[in-house]
Length: 179
Image 1 (cartoon, rainbow, N blue to C red):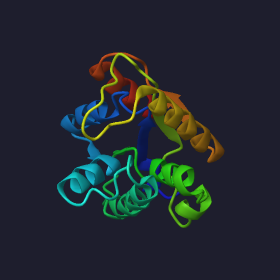
Image 2 (image 1 turned 120 degrees about the horizontal axis):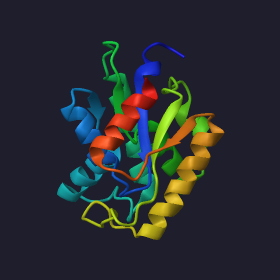
Image 3 (image 1 turned 180 degrees about the vertical axis):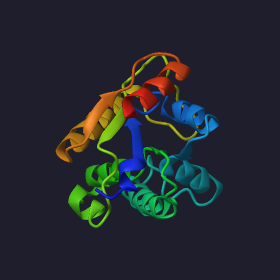
Image 4 (image 1 turned 90 degrees about the horizontal axis):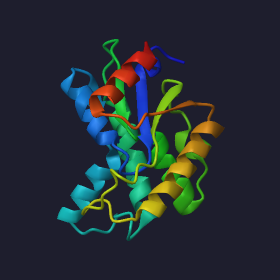
């Protein structure tokens, strides 16, 4: 694994599980954070044609998310510090596999692996809320969570489930786990 990839950490897991809130706290603490491609795509699509929204055309959405995540990764300059990805490339590849049957190995071909530890936000119904960008229900979010866990396992990542605690405690947990 390249030295750069060793510092690229994925925060994944259940939709509505507090990932973005955790990453905002890490950003405020001075760590670099790459925001979720899916949210950015939904925001752009809702301002435009809306054709590549996950509830309209999941395959088109997932293809755009893979492309955006690849650009995100290529644009991160290495300065030796941690970089946290809110979902990102592997999550997008899992969505594309689910929507179109395109294998993870095809979507991830040539991409450097990420840090071997992946932080997973577990299903947390007390936090889960629908909004304009998250229109699927909690059951669909849990199904996606299980697909992600299975995919990361197939790719030999070490899954660390985030505790259901405060944002401050979650951020400390992530940093302590990384050492």
